[in-house]
Image (tube, rainbow, N blue to C red; front, top):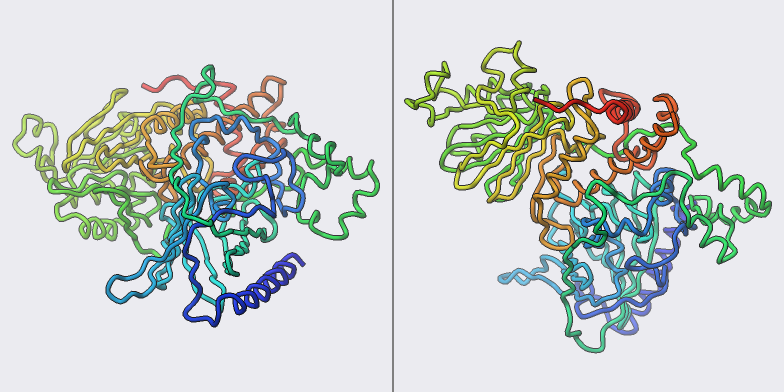
Length: 610
């Protein structure tokens, strides 16, 4: 029924737009020109743009259990967290800012063919490219932005735009989010001095049905003077550390009934869901006692444990893919774990080597992007998906700096293979493997640093994060950080308590990464992040991951203080709002295993790594 209503609404908008278009603009010739300066005319969700509106007002949104829990635990004070202060506007919320907008065309200077339609929003400085030249969307492992990647085509008087690769954003900036797995289809219809934008968001992480929204843009009578609205984050709560993230515990939102009581709306209706869109919903709230009981039942997770619906962006055809991340640093993906490669005239500098199952193809991919053989390899962990290709990649490389050096006598293959570096515990865990498969150059608690291929490279040990042997690597000129399993875009962190991992060490490591990142503007771009698994990201996703772990930590700690057992904590489903994005009910790392690791590391803190 929801899909049918969306189609009817779209058809109506098309008919009205086509009629008005014919009256005011004349016959169609190769699409419609949307160029000009515009400002939003509020109608749908009036007053709900840019951190405005009532809390716990979710009626009419087909939200699922995960988003309801996310929104109910979201306080307005979350916006004071440094990385949240300059958050960008994701599509379609892009059009809900109160400032000015400009739309123009980019054309090929030789053929004058339309290459892209550009849309710039003053607030958050969103700069959208809607490509009209038939190009394909990027692969799944490419970075996401708040404006995403958009392609468009004209369908009569209507411009249809499809957007992917979006960051987590808002549908309403009062906790009603859309996930980074959302895709948006927009339909633009110009009628005189107005543009109607009909957007349909499909989001398998947070919604059970498509979300339809419309925006009206009105032409500015003159070109506005102000187009920049720069945002710099700063300390807003001086007594709060980076390990504190404001959040409500399940069932403890003090604003729960504010909107419902003020507007005489049944709480069950305010809590949203697909059924709140149905005409039959009114019958459900006639009985106040039954309605309130149903509403209270929604305040805690009730359904079965959820598995993640997020796609693993790793190629599945047995092929290795490469992508330039920034500067001289590339991603090599396809052999289990992400591999980073810095190139230059001194030879490749490789971080992690994958499982080794596709080592020959990995070596071939490195040889295509590097004219010289691999000189150094860094292991960010001892786990096999990061070290399995050590022997093969090392053998294919050569460390010319060792040939004839003072230290060459300490290495049996000095100068003949690439040198493998790693935190000492990596070698300790791999001690039973052949020497060629484990680090020969190790470090302990201090950073290792090199100047390689024209840039400083820093290797930082991160004790007691997911294991006792984790490291991150920062390529400073390219400004790329390789995190290993400390940051994983495909699942909850695999905290190995038995081998020195801890939740607190993991949070500390993520904050260390965030202390070294800089965005270009409004949490987009800047320092790029290569996680252990999943797509390339930037500061925003690392902060979101950190926030999630801090919030889960606080919930588990609250139950531990009340004497809860592990079984009780797992039964409480304290991760319900994040499970559809990062959880798993089967496989090598389930949600229950993650919660057990959190519980044990909080109740029995790990000893510091050597």
